[in-house]
Image: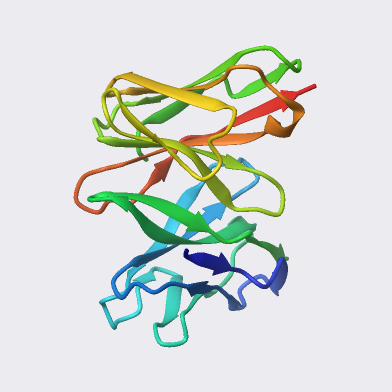
Length: 117
Length: 112
């Protein structure tokens, strides 16, 4: 069974600085998807970025980028130029197949990101 | 934002009472999911649906049932609520080209 581990329960960063959140996973599959979701205090779960394992290029979305190391099964999220609005819980998730064309997400326990003004 | 609503948003109930949570989507997506979120855990899958009247169990399905009579609605029922079911419940949908899951706003359920 696939597992996802986020080893940092909490991280803090100064506004405008860069921070990296760690995620490791375990799987025997060769083709899969990984995601980072953000959950602000509003509780809404918001997709930040996704990575397809067969793509060697790391995904980027504006100030958010990932460092995907397939052999090491590592999927870290880098947030550049941190802003106060980035303060939230961040969850790493692995897409696991339930049946043909149907998937569930396996989640890490989350990392709380604090932005210091 | 994906058109997903959940009702109610908050509910307090007593042990032993039945509870139904509703998820409604306007995206016409095929797949719908119910997850629960507890402190120290990410989300865990309760049940999912792959079409009207087609549902199956997830990782933590004990004590829960679901129904989907229309594409847009997915109901989660706690037949007899217990304190261990106090949690935040999220509905998600997926479909279309990317198969990415999009989430509703969540329902906070407290069972006293």
